[in-house]
Image (tube, rainbow over the protein chains, first blue to last red):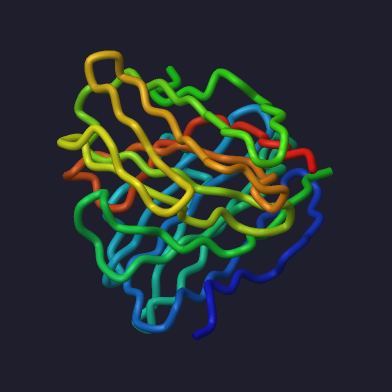
Length: 115
Length: 113
């Protein structure tokens, strides 16, 4: 079956702009999580959605937001981009939202460069 | 405050030998620990996990050991193969926090033929 699909794979923006990233989870998976990977901070949790509701949020400013649609597809948005937002943004899906024992399946990521 | 740490940024091992990747954590409330492997230009892929009520879990060439008193876990790969060359991340989760994982910074493993 198809894996987690993230679009676009690469994009370049300038400071002050906004960006929207898309994630299509594995068919049947209802939980979608977003992570930011940077060389200095590693992989950091952004937020998680299940049944169109945000279930958890990481320690990121309000410029970072997301949503989930009824078909479980998810988008994340970053407004007023800063240079430090340059990162690989990873989406992961899971069948359910429950204990931390669930295995996450990650997409290949969207690499954002802010100039 | 990094709750999960991988103190070795890189590790080089000869093919056929054992690779040992280490991970330390500070939050004693973590319930599950997972290891993910990441190749360049790909997302992390799940490798193996362990519940906090166990001290060892094996899956083929991969074994994870958990020492709760030391807040330390390790991943053993025996025997190591060149295809194991990747970045390995340990991650931890809380039982009541859904799928939120706290990751370590990663260790780059290089297995030399």
